[in-house]
Image (cartoon, rainbow, N blue to C red; front, side):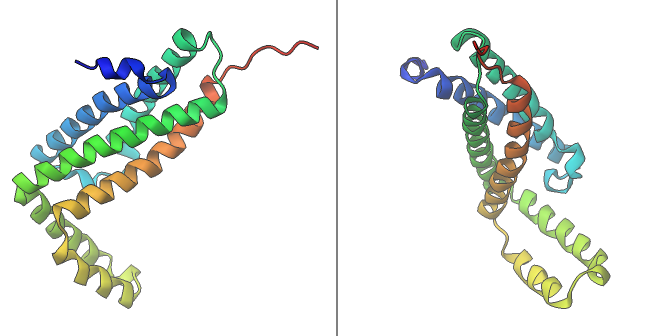
Amino acid sequence: MFSFLDRIHPLARVPLRYGLIGGVLGFLLLVVLYYIDRHPFFIHPIFDSRIAVFGVFIVFALRELRDYHFGGILFFWQGMFAGGVFVATFAFVCSVLLWVFALNVPDFVTQYIELATNQLKALVDQMDKEVYDVKMASLPSTTAFVLAKLYFVQCLGIGLFISIIISVILRRQPARTE
């Protein structure tokens, strides 16, 4: 089924495969959170499931690259590139699935707007009046695409930091001969 992937260099193929699997898993986690009345866009960043999913999948991808494809050697740039491919793939797959889900379950966007409005009203004293007015005015025009785009951008930001950390930890360079 995925024989076209065999023609791609392992540095892109391995994280692409993990990104496809991780993106579907990440989407399923979003749906589960939504249906247990924990809207995924209002989870505290420390408890965001993407942190764990990114950490686990990037470690597996980089270890596979290092141990099975590169002879036990993994440079930092290779780790960052593979991490970037994984995160971009994950973000794309999960965002597209989220967009389709939000189009088919309009209550997802409606609930987001209601929760965001309530959150802004609770924080009105801590915000600048102009910023508050702009945010309140933009909330009713929120669409499924806007939420999918927001999720995509958040994935890229979270993934960058996790990729850096894991690439530093898992890198192995050849021994120097002097």
